[in-house]
Each structure stands twice: as C-alpha cells, then as structure tokens.
Amino acid sequence: MHAVDHINIDVDDLAACYEFYRDELGLGVRREPSDFRGEHAMFQVGETVVTLAETGRADAWDERGLDHPLDKAHVAFETDREEYERLTAELGGQFPKQGPYDWDEFEGFYFLDPSGNLLEVITYESPAGERERPLLTHDDVE
Image (cartoon, rainbow, N blue to C red; front, side):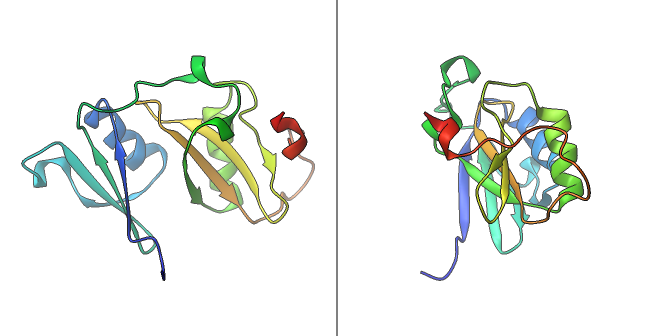
C-alpha cells in the first residue's frame, strides 16, 4: 500500500455535514452534492478524497454513548497550530476526555460532526506559549 486514496463517511444529514466539513473544517470541495444523483459530496484533503454519503445507515451515535474517544473509529486530519487551536476552542465541551491529547510526536483533539461521526484534528507544531488546557495522555484512557 502507498497511501489512503479515499474515505467514505456515512452521515444522517448531508446538507449540515457538507457545510460543516466545508466551512468549519475548511476542506476543499471536489464535487458538490448537486454533482451526484445520490446523496454524496466529495472533498480533497491533500492526496486523499473524503466522501460524505447520506445512506440512511449512519450510526446516529452521539456523545451520550462515549466513555472515551478511542472507543469509536475515527478519521484524523492534520493541520497547523493556528487552525488546531481554533477548532479546539470552537468544538470543545462536546464530551468528556475530548482532549487535547499528548500522542508523543503530535497533539490531538477529538470532536463530533453533525451526524455524530468521531473526528480528530492533530498538529505536529508546538504551541507558541503556555497551553490553555492540560494535555491528556494514554494514562487518561482508562
């Protein structure tokens, strides 16, 4: 294997998730929902395509069923420190143990999209000054 070509994500509400991934996460639109006969949208993230599909089979999962982010599969996006800090500020408080986490080489923060899919944003950049919140570690997973 050489790379991840694409990722498909089931969503409950394509319109809300399309706006969230486009506007909140800032993913580049490859194909808008109107380009498809079915309920899909495609984004380009580096060399990887992220496709949202309103299939009627989304988990309808939310923070009430979450003890820890590692309890559910997720998609992780890498970004710079500035965007990382913006997302942690705007999307914090969704569930306990959301982060940020110290994963040794990088820092990660988990959050939910409008359909309850678990996502993570990571950065390899160190903060410029003191951290606003303490970092969680693997020891906090228990």
